[in-house]
Image 1 (cartoon, rainbow, N blue to C red):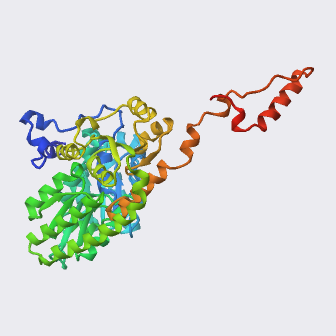
Image 2 (cartoon, rainbow, N blue to C red):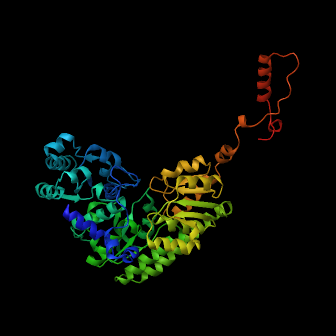
Image 3 (cartoon, helix red, strand yellow):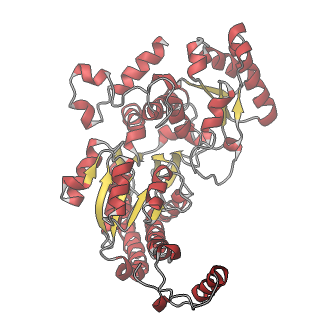
Length: 496
């Protein structure tokens, strides 16, 4: 645990983070997130964060050294997509029992599990994740992984990020450290070129990076490693030979980007593929970095030509929605890079942003939001469910964009809702992704169901029922009233 403590302190001391640089020495050691309360899982633990970052490496076997519940809670925890290998979708765990813990059989069981996976699947690598239980009982997964790698002749990578050490974001960074220590730089490619780049912090949710990669292919830019979205182990292992890098989510992997620049001189920038303007700027930045690293300057002209063509096509498609969505008000309840990138994308077509959360956003993210919205009152760190409901039920927003955990607040307030987080079913990156995002917003807002659910129920209306005919019994009067009700039109009802 001493080596893990040193690693955590190193991760907390992140010089590439402006927020971290502004702290004193004592505050820097405490990190950015408060440790979780023991027994609480809301918001994710460090193990969950490490699994999120590494699981989309698709041809790797991900082995969880833990009781069954740890893997059951984290399996397939993001909607990442793969264009080939599907081994990452197979769940592996050592399934420790109380007897294994008492008898000290954890390390033996782990070694056996690695052997069985190697014999059954022969993967290029096995990632072994420590968890709270195995960390507390002192299982040395690094020693077991080293011995198994030597025995079976494959890469066995220890991921030392037990949930008890901190938050999900800390787990993201510890996963990056595991890649730096055991994976990146271990394979020398024989096809390195002047247009090779890495994309860091891109998860290929719903396959959205596949909307961006064709643009890079047209420029002759090769993505040597997209970490982690749709990645292969050998691609990640040879990522140190790329010429430049783009980081999509600095909150998760800023330490990986900085240390790759220090070790292998790979310059990076933070950008976004959400929205037309940001996509174009990201392509320009990639081309400029490659030229600085020795690529042919002709790529700058080709990039501008591509941008002009794609922007013209995208804006033409968006014109069909501009009139329908002009002035619509959106409440964005997400965080990280989406707190500003999606804001910019929606403002480009005339949508008004009434609020955006900046939870999990960096200082740079918040500054971008301030520049875009020109008003700090539209930013909130975290809004309580009651406040969200009040805002939506008072019709201060026409639609809410958020993750699945807050969808029922919008539905209860009878307000359209669209998933913008990892559970989403549609890709929103790149030029085509922006058109798809606007299309989905238009479908959600103008869905006729919202007009229907906002109307009062028929039994809440007072029908203008006339007096009973004289001489009728109560039973026949009831039948008579029901028949009258069935044949009524809207004009027969009173005020609702």
